[in-house]
Image (cartoon, rainbow, N blue to C red; front, side, top):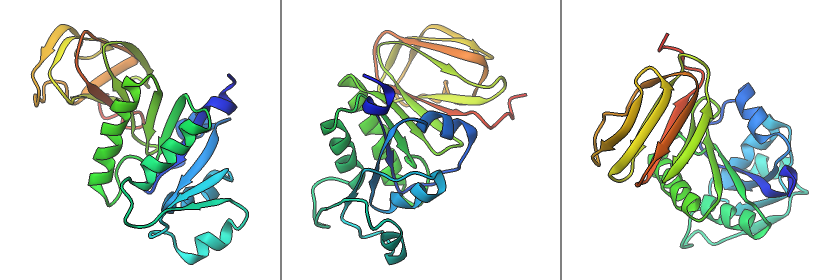
Length: 218
């Protein structure tokens, strides 16, 4: 299935910086806006195919700027966040890769944390996930191997959402081999990429959070 059919970018309400990495990541994808996340559409120069939410955080001028985008309204007293509804809509339309743009940072730390937890759950269901603010990126790490192409000297951390066993990190300033990370440990915070970094895990749930534009590790 071509990228334009199976990759969906969900526009969320958090902060979003229009970096080169962001533009490259979302290029060719389909777009769904979740409530106030629609404000990112104009900056990206795109028009989402649908706009979902309770629209409690959508100013009137934003609604007027996109009169032709179909809206799918939900009551404010719904049982899911606008972001979760948007993700469900993308999956119903055939998504296999999901880019959650505006998922990190912003005024609602509860939403940002929920996006990370949801990403891990979706990865366990077989979906490919990227969460981004433009300046920060996050990907789930489950049992298996992933690779991240990061600029040399950029910072990254591994956040364990459970006990981690058999954790390996290659091509980093502080490599690890077959490492056991207790739940709640800060041992894997603030590592430095040497370029493409390879992560592998025997068991557990984690998020790799990278800062590709933060070269303070030089």
